[in-house]
Amino acid sequence: MTQKLGSPGEARGWCAEARARGGRVGFVPTMGALHEGHLSLVKRAREECGCAVVSVFVNPLQFNDPKDLERYPRDFEGDVRLLAGVGCDMVFTGTLEQFFPESGGDARRIVGSEPGPAARGLEGARRPGHFEGVATIVRRLFEVVEPARAYFGEKDFQQTLVVRDLARRMGRPEIVVCPTEREPDGVARSSRNALLEPAWRERAPAIHRALQAARGAWRERGVRDGAELERTMRAVLAPHFPDIDYAEVRDPDAWTELMPTTPLARAQALIAVRAGSVRLIDNLRLD
Image (cartoon, rainbow, N blue to C red; front, side, top):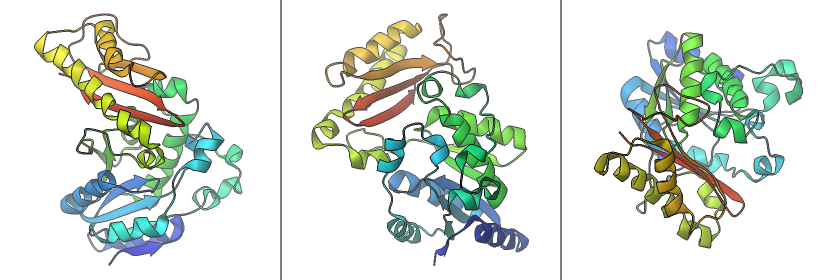
């Protein structure tokens, strides 16, 4: 049975008791509206740690668009039912003031956490303050749960780099990045997919096709030039998405703010597009 708790204070006590009993806690931070991608992380956390804990909190600190925050899907009770089906041991939520009592509920009074160099460029450039908001809440969540391992999906690739940097600075926990879960047509599973209008959902598979085209260029034609890989992706995307935020590559082991201009030895292709009122991101390792 999944224990449902309503505050980070209760969650802190529950996790302390679990560790006192000799348990290893595996942790999956989420903003709710759970799907199979989230559930796969929970299953892995339970398999590897024996105890799986999930947080559900739509973090206002990482939204630079108030309308996006307002529209973000929320269904805590539905999330709890899904988690019970995959053996989650405990799920908790809370308010901004509960997570940051020093703020009095005012986000402007919260001292942010430095997101590190991986926050530069791409998502960091287009969503000012986003990664600082991510680092700030994830640090607090790690302090509450004190997990042995924390699990994140690769779909938010740049975010996984930010979180790894944070965990390294904190000295804990071990960060486990799990492969992106996809729909049968290749679309990356995302809570935002529920907001897509049908016409945009039909176009969405082009994102994965563009990433695969870049992988094909890398593996079959030996393309190592970032600009040429970008052109390859944009050629696939352009007929479907008039508003392409970016379609670029980075060295995943040596992140740079701008796309490298010298031939790449390793490459992660990353895409962000506007699908009507919804922004979609995806990525794929090429090498």
